[in-house]
Amino acid sequence: MNFAVISDNLLYFMVGSWPNGPIGGAALTVLLSLASALASAVLGLALGIALSQSKGWPGMALRTVLGFLRAVPVLMLIFWIYFLLPVVFGLDVPGVGAVTVALALIGGAYLAHAVSAGIDSLPRGQSEAARALGLGRWDALRLVILPQALPRMAPSFVNQWVALIKDTSLAYVIGVSELSFVATQVSNRVMVYPAEIYLFVAAVYYILCMIVEVGIGRAAARYRIRPA
Amino acid sequence: MSSPVISIRNLSKRYGEFQVLSDCSLDVARGEVVVVCGPSGSGKSTLIKTINGLEPFQFGELRVDGAGVGDPGADLRALRARVGMVFQHFELFPHLTVIQNLMLAQVKVLGRSGVEAAERGMALLERVGLADQRLKRPAQLSGGQQQRVAIARALAMDPVVMLFDEPTSSLDPEMVGEVLDVMTALAEGGMTMVCVTHEMGFARRVADRVVFMDRGRILDDAGAEEFFGASGRRSARAGEFLSRVLRA
Image (cartoon, rainbow over all chains, first blue to last red):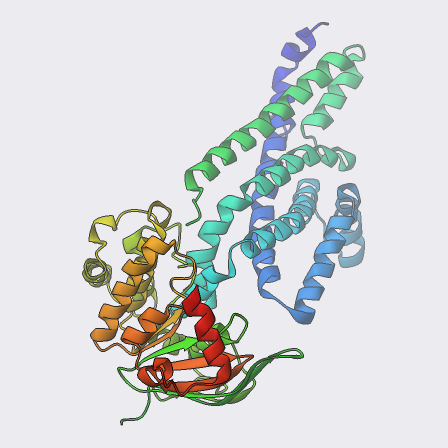
């Protein structure tokens, strides 16, 4: 093993050709992850709340859309957004944007079911009690249901965000120079150190995922509510 | 007698094929305490939940303090703010402290200031003997204490009527008394109350009237003395029910 190849190329692994070119490497992976995690959380919360509140055909329609997003491979969705939108709508989507949108949609669809299940997991009496006091549906949800349901959803959010960090590596297929893309570049250039390079890449992904896991775990523990 | 606070006329409700309530009629006058009893599945909890619009119904008429509950466009939020409800499983909000439980709806629904809501909340906690518990979470209280807080929470809205849905059914036996004491004091203070309960001793001591339900119908609606008396004018089903409950 010769890890000099890592230290020689460390800056490139971390930030790509920045500041002389666009930001890349691990920094881009982090940015992609942050943007799509945030967007998937907002989308997942909104759709999950809608899912738990809607019955009949609107609920069915929503379920169908979510089912579709969960069934599509991430790679396929990235391709569609990157290649199809410009053809069909004449929209020119930058690679980074296409990946973020694809991951946000798929992550949001998964999270929507977790959010909806979290809301439904509370005893029916809680929302009855809130409504019996005269709170409207939205206030009952915001002030009584979600503060109890959100900490219960934390493990699902960790799962989803960890999966999402790793899925950012799929961005390489449309030439977005995130961590696994620059790693492949370096590996192809130096030819003889793939084991060292990909071990290093795995370690970086591991650290990123652990940060999410520990961070969310701590936050959830602080807000965890003992049921009465 | 002035016009009743609650007036239920020929109310019926179905869940699909299942008839939960059949042709129920009931008046509750201001200051009256009505106990609703009957075997489980008789529709008594459903009946009490129609009164504040938590359970919709298909036929009949229901007026609370003059407002039609089943009317299209009825302002159910305004109605519920004036009808206090106490649940079998307390349903305190576990993420809030005791005093926050009492303040939430006062602030969000009645628009009271935080100070005003806290003062009203503290006064009611004093009344149910739990002022010193104000900063605890519900999970730190006993069942009996939780139910007393739940009663105080409902009272904080200054309701015109209080509904109790089996308030002592999920309590350990030694805690039933403290909750019934609070309810008795409330009744003596002139509160209009509808209580679904199996506590026949409480019914006998406190209730003005007893309503007996079976299979979604109101079979008996009588004065408490009349209902419990030896020469009791009650239905055969109610007699059976009483002998079973009192034997237990």
